[in-house]
Image (cartoon, rainbow, N blue to C red):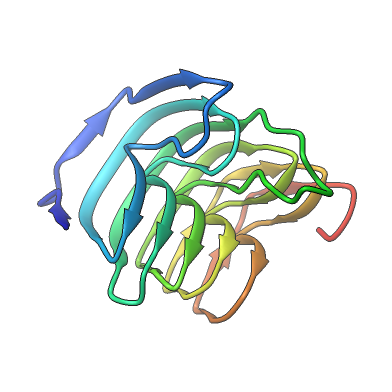
Length: 165
């Protein structure tokens, strides 16, 4: 699937599902492309795998490119030993799908694996976050836990956490 926003703006995306996983504009993506999209005034509250563009993205041929997110994302899941959570400005879980030329700002909070671009993931390039990112464990300005490549990424917000920050 390819979704090209053609530079359009989606305003006031509101999702309040504190008991549900995989929440975002797209719940999950596999080998998909999301391009040229801006989300303003996002407000998403969900349990695990939460991101403004997608809660969960995977697949070698997938990419999230030239996307901008501004808003508040909150993960309500509380698992640390069971790992889950994955809260990110662009994608909660971003595995093998790349995030290129992406930007996030706002407030991003959860318990475990929380980041300005992705909670857990890899392949972030030429991206920036100005978000305030808060969690307990594995919290980062760009990615809470990086598995592979982070190139030319810039962070200028605040990060709050207790372990592996």
